[in-house]
Image 1 (tube, rainbow, N blue to C red):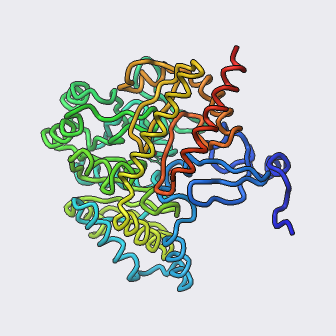
Image 2 (image 1 turned 30 degrees about the vertical axis):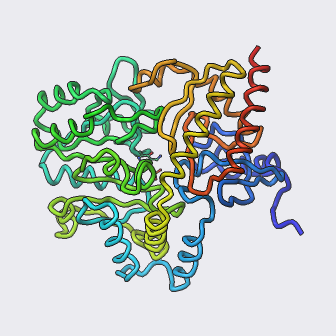
Image 3 (image 1 turned 120 degrees about the vertical axis):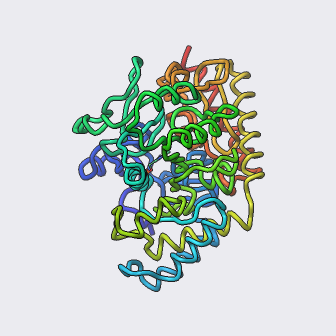
Length: 426
Ligand code: PMP
């Protein structure tokens, strides 16, 4: 007996477009082919048309343990039998908070939230209250959420502009944009403006390309933040619990004042965390700085963080994920050479990026902006068509659940997709 309301993705999509704007619930999904998935298991997704995909998008990052990971799935399912939202404290949230501080090693305290977007806002408010200053230095190509004061497009002449109709552009006036991986540019901004509260950065640039910080860059930001009395915020929504158990702070050995976690921290459940030093975080504790939320540290959220982070700590999948990703990068390079695509592949095994152009490593957003995104979008469609679920914007993720069979299947599917794409482009 069929348990679904339609029998093909196309049929679902026709219905969906009547009741869901664009047929989706996040604008990020508008560009992707409209495929309806029935379920995810491990490294695979299965659609309603009976086809399977090796998943290298992983829910845009959260599924670090693959889909429906045991034991997290069982732990959260059993915890929520005790109810979900108490508007009061419970043991699960305390254990999760202690465990996260222990694992990350540098923060004194955490505050639960529901989305990365929202916890970034809490970090900004805290930094402003702490410094008594207003403006935020941030970087071309970085993403910190969809709200009016963060959503931005980066025109060639510099600065940033609203990226959405209906967005109040004035809210970006407190944003100071500089190129990333360029310490002198940050120093100049800080020296010229005594009203800067914080520097916020993705510690590995993963929302445009996959660009590692240059040697000494994060240390340099740390030094500048100290020199100018500015709060250093790492937006670890993608990098946290992915590029290392302790995220980029651990991988690159640089400690921020505040950091935002999301995605992998709960292995798929909707949770974010703001972590930081006690002298900052206590501003919430005294009530001086407000951050509230009906769903903050729900039983589900706390149980998911507790179980996901314990699983990541105890199973230590990072070498496996990195190795699998490196092998996959080689598979893509080989297939690209075979079919003369000239695809550029760069990044870490656990999160890398593929693009048309340039040959040399990309070190900043301008380099990413020069790649041929439309052509890559066409290639992504061929990959999806051949059973590799990937992002149109070129980022690839790998999970602990990816194994030899997944690599093997990805290899033959990538080869077939690249061959078909090469034919279609002539
Ligand atoms: N910061 C970064 C670095 C992100 O990548 C994202 C989401 N992709 C966000 C913030 C916003 O997180 P959310 O989608 O959970 O609101």
